[in-house]
Length: 469
Picture (cartoon, one colour):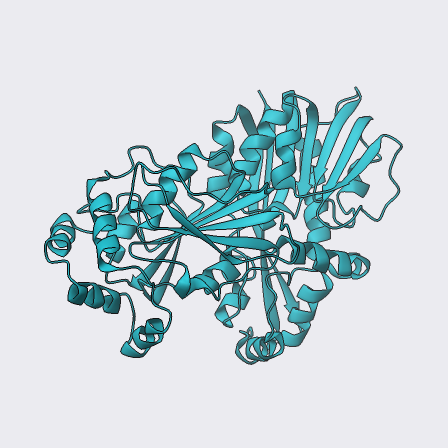
């Protein structure tokens, strides 16, 4: 089993004890020096490296975190796989970058002959050549020289010997996604595609082996504190502007009544991500409530609640573990789980909380949502894949009684109006950027217009209603 012997805290979140942690598993020959500029508000970032002794006790950060995100790069993917299979920490999103669990493999990793040749001819000169191949240009390699790892030749040789005797992972770990660089000269892109054929993949055509990890943190790790702040700030403008979200909540509740029905007996209900209460206002008059718990990152819904209701400001991905198995009759959620790091894992956990005959009903926004932002060069969420969400429930003891996706295109008079809509509904809570003004100007300039000169904004609504067998 591969175990990192060294750790270094690269970044501390806004508070002295950040509630969330990013574990960064680095590759062969690395230390934290090249990555010390990484940051993600709301998270501590700890780099793990130096696998020179596969029998050593693992070096893991102390402290209690409500959520852990794993980002593993290069040979660190193989080490992270061992950690993830045995971790007792609350791991949600797991991202593999330019590496595979079959780190030395002719079809799903570095070809054996290339690895063996590297081992046989290892020298200071060959290490320099290897590092040069990690970069797209000589200028990038020269920049790396200013922050190059401080580890010596013997340490690198010993570590490579460890990787040589460690077999590919026998049992795959659960990965949220894999990021592949199209110009990776270390792990062949075709081998990575083969290794991750059953995992969601994001490919960047011009990315070399030495990946832009800051970009990956910005795009694929949700700043949940910012999400809470932006949605709280938009609470009084949300209902007036969120027409798509309002119709989505109405669509969900109509389908619940049509497909699952409403029982006469008192029911225990959990609503996840109530927001301003668009869904809450629809089911309150129609359900005979025994208990109601409402969760949200930001604030309670803006509607009167019955005496049996309890509101909790929390992160649902962590909180779901505290719900007693078989205790709920309804688990409801509208326009929320696309913000989760591990929505498929959340669905499997939520299934356990339902009693026989219990109903899980949710809407969310699926892949293809806000596609215009990507076309304009902006950043949007990594929206869930609807097929994978259905697969997550298939083995969870639930029968899917309704599922559908429906693209909805909102059209605005200008790109500025489309971006203003994102702001007034809190949907721009993707990252904190000191150059936000310049980024907005770029989005306006490159935003795609339709044939009528309007600025479209696509939402791919997805709905799942399932009943516990």
